Length: 297
Image (cartoon, rainbow, N blue to C red; front, side, top):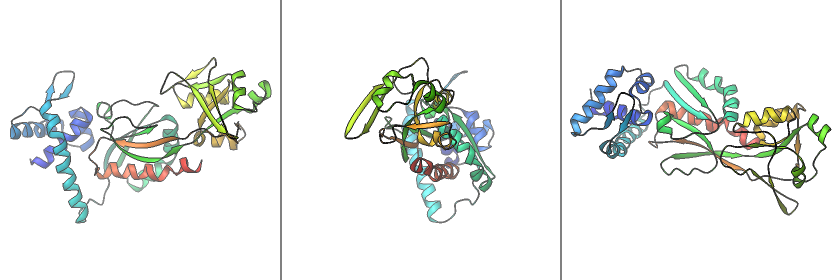
């Protein structure tokens, strides 16, 4: 049992908060992961994790060791890459947190990745809001909007373009708004993730129009908003890549095409190290490749 293997187990336990999760991820037994941590604690004469029957918390000594462990593993990974000794096979599990809309799009293309790397496994955790990546045991996550957490390493994938849409049936019943300010007379289906106010900002014709979206229905899932718009409950403001097929099929109508809404930045984030394990780097590269949908929509 060597220190490098133990350091690798240590950073993964720190990232996932679970010995069993690292055991599943690496294929090593849980007692092996425990022995790795015990080896480090004996070597450094420090307790790295405070253990209870219900939780595993990193100690102050553990937090002090973590950046040095990342640095050691990153140097090793860089050396292996430079000398061409990286494993040819991509294997292992990557837990990826994605927004609902992008997750559904990604699922349709995931076969491209898994066919190319049959020993790779991907677990998608799909919802529109995520908390701490370490607490949730995520290797990567997709985030929309600016990244506030300075501890995260972010790779910009592109921007999310949003457009106002409504169903043809709805417009036949309620009429088509000609100007964003006309939305005040229509039920707007607000996407409630990310704040309590739901102002829609439109720019066009050398003017700006800000509308406070309100109506009898709102949701914290963009997919729920889309389904409500298709069902004719009102007007929604949604990512263009999420609705372009519905528009092409004639199920939705793009409103105010001469107006634009400020784009949102779109990132893949992780907790480090900067030189990722091969399996995680492979999934990140795949995200970069398929995010062209954001640039083209």
